[in-house]
Amino acid sequence: VSLSIMLALAVRPVGALIFGRLAEKTGRRPVLMLNVLFFSVFELLSAWSPSFAAFLVFRVMYGVAMGGIWGVASSLAMETIPDRSRGVMSGIFQAGYPCGYLLASVIFGLAYSVVGWRGMFLIGALPILLLPWIYFKVPESPVWLAARERKEDIALLPVIRSHWKTCLYLVVVMACFNFFSHGTQDLYPTFLKIQHGFNPHTVSIIAIFYNIAAMLGGIFFGAVSESIGRKKAIIIAAFLALPVLPLWAFS
Image (cartoon, rainbow, N blue to C red; front, side, top):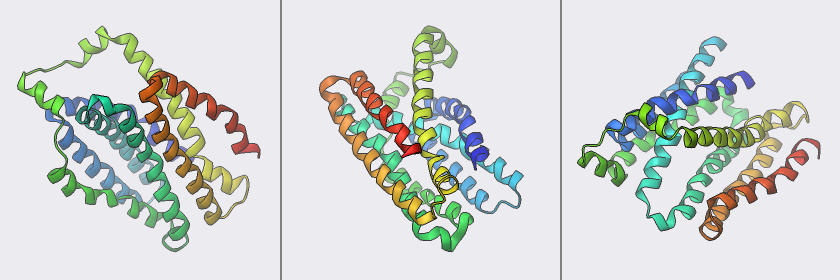
């Protein structure tokens, strides 16, 4: 389990670079649809893996798609909403992550003993059903449309050279935040099952509670950032989480 998660996460920067650049050329919406299609297909293939080696290959390809979808989706969202609402909306957007985790926890608790791990991956491919809705209902980013109207074509390397300090800062910050998040969430159910011997139902209940809290926290601090600023909201949230982390393992 740890190896498959590690590989899927390790290749996400590759997907971010590939699909991010593609989104600059062809638009956010079509690349978002391509990402959803891509990771849904590899969810299906993961469910039908004939061997563990094939399963790892499919998880790597899934990780590439996931690396692309977060950046493209966040760009589309942040470029579409009004500037004055970005704090609140970013909190709601971020709450989507634990919301998906919450749904997975509920389904795991209810269905895992019936459908097994293969069935869980089949269920994980259901986002492919969102493609018609994205195509017909989600508008393209007005920022990208305006740039295309001006015939702007921003090369990647010159941007990185001009803003390398900002790029490095963002990479380090996101690496720390993802260590914060994935280190406590992705492996926590496995930790509860192996180290504490909890059954799937108990693990699911625990995951439901901490993901509800994560959703509320995302929305709350997104709203708070409108008043005190993004940086202060991030720092306060991170410091509030630190004393809680040991309790996850030793309570």
